[in-house]
Amino acid sequence: MNSLSTSLSKNANAAFFGLVVALGVLLATPGILFAQSDSFSLTLTPPLFQLSIGPGEFWASSLKAVNTNDYEITLYATVMNFSANGDEGQGKFTPIVGESSEEKSQTLAGWIEVAKEPVVVAPGQSVDIPFSVRIPEDASPGGHYAAILVGTQPLRDEQGGPVIRVSSFISSLFFVRIKGEVFENASIREFIVGSSWRSDARIPMSLRVENTGTVHILPAGDVVVYDMWGIERGRVPVNQNNNFGNVLPHSVRKFELEWAGEVSWWNTGLYSAVVTLGFGDEEKQSISSETHFWVVPITPLAILGGGILVLILLLRWMIRRSIRRTLGRYHFAPKEDDTS
Image 1 (cartoon, rainbow, N blue to C red):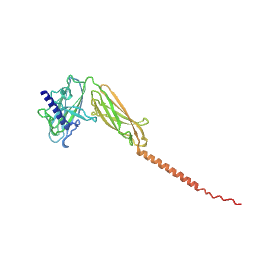
Image 2: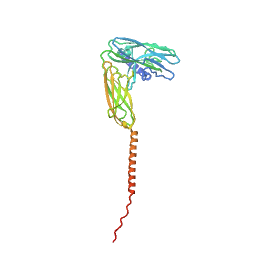
Image 3: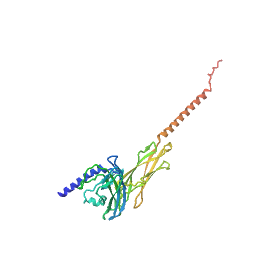
Image 4: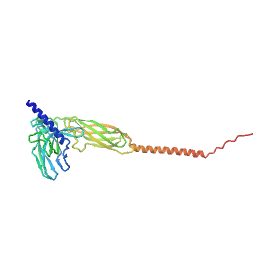
C-alpha cells in the first residue's frame, strides 16, 4: 500500500510539475528571455554546449548571467531533460521527479549538478553560475540532451515539491555525445514547393529531415535550381552557419526555404530543384532529393500575347484597307447591247 501511495504521489508530482514547466518555459529559446513585462531583461551565455565525452568522465564549467536592468535580481537554476517537440525546432523540458529515481541515474539532467542556492545579481552586473557534468560508467553511447533553466523564482519549494509562481526563464541547452558505438543516419522525409504552378519566380520550399540515428546531426547543404534546359538558375543555402539547426535522434526537423529568380517571359517552363545535404561526425554522409515546378509568368506573357494580338489586328486592318484602295482604282462601265 505504501509503495502504491508513493507511486501515485510521484505521478501526481510529475503531472503537476509538468504543467508548471509547460506554462512557464515550454517555449523558451536558448539565451533569450520570455519576460512577464518589457521592463525586465536577462542574458544567459553560452546558449548552447555541445560536448563529446566518454563514460566515467567529468567536466565542469559555468554559465554567465547578465543583469541589464537597473535593479537587483535574484536567480534560481534548475536542470531538466530536453527533447524535440514537433518539426519546427521547438523543444520541451521535462523535470526529474525524485532524487533517487531511475530517471536521474539514466538521463543527462541527472548527471548535471548546479548550485541550488539563489544567486543575487546587482544592477548592470554579471555572475557566473558553476555546474558540473559527471558521466556514469554505464552511460549508453549516443546523444543525450538537457538544459539548465535560470529564472527569477524557484520551481520547487524548500521541501522539494512543485509550486506555481509567476517567473521568467531562460535556458542554456546541453547536447552531449557519449563516446562509443553510435549510429548516424538520416533521410529526407519531404521536399516540396508551395505550389507546382507559379506565376512569379519566388518559390517557397519546405524540407523535412528525419534523424533515424542515435545521436544528433547538423545537416547542411544547398538547393540548386535548374531550368528546363538544365542551366543552373540559383542556389539556396540550407542550415549553413547555424549551430541551432540540429536534428535530434528519432525526430523530424522542418526547414523553410525560398528561391527568388528573375521574372520575365523567358523564365517560362518546367524547373527542377535538387537539395543535397551533408552530415555526420563519425563518417561524412550525404542525402539528396528532387522536386519540380512550373514557372508561368502571367503578366509578362499577357503583355506579350496582347502585343501579338494587337499586331495581328493591325496587319489585318492594313491588308483589308490596301485591298479596298486597290479595288477603288478600277471603274467597270456597263456593257452596251448591240442593235441592228
